Image (cartoon, rainbow, N blue to C red; front, side):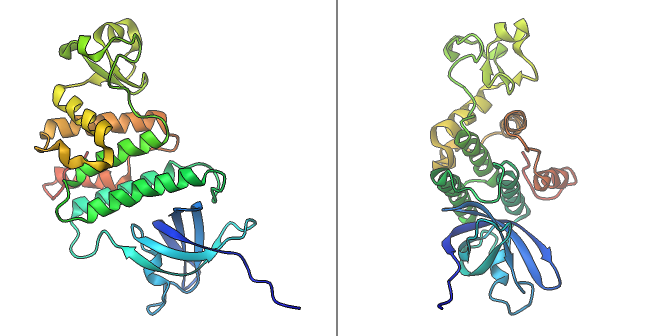
Length: 281
């Protein structure tokens, strides 16, 4: 009787996080292009000469091969190669923080279940967003990391069908051109732009003023996403950057289950306060 081979999968993947398992092994959470979220165990990956060791570093883009058995919570990582390491060379604190923040967002704001087989197109779409973000973050000539991260957050919302509404008041439908800048608000609860009349009417739960520079940035994110953060140049003012970061943070927190401010961004903000490098959102 012949030996039946176990099913395997070969695909592109992003390492979201990893942690030790036993004395020498590691478990890693992957976002794959073809199979969604997959959790793998890499046997003996923590040994210095293991060929699996480079495949369990968070933030790396890989080509991987792993077992694909529906009844298993952990699949076996069998091999692969590193396609891109965004932190290769001399990474800055800012680049590192925004990379780890993006990984945390993708890992936490996910559908239930380890494997996503019912929506392969959705998995490939989300992987494509992550792939574009990491390649831009790796480019020495790319825009500043904060702008790329804002574009990533916008794309993540868009993939969930939750991108903010900017063209009209979310409550009364008044066109934006008819909303006075001095009364304009941004409300996560209502889904985006809010006119002064609706805000005064009680629809401003958690809303904040929306300045013109911040609105221009949000317009650019809506128009170009990860396809063109450089179009936001010249670089936004620190005030506009903080405003947009705050609006997106509150919007994500209201609409995406499991969201919280990524710990890496909190550390970046603390580093900025203490006088170290960083442009935290």
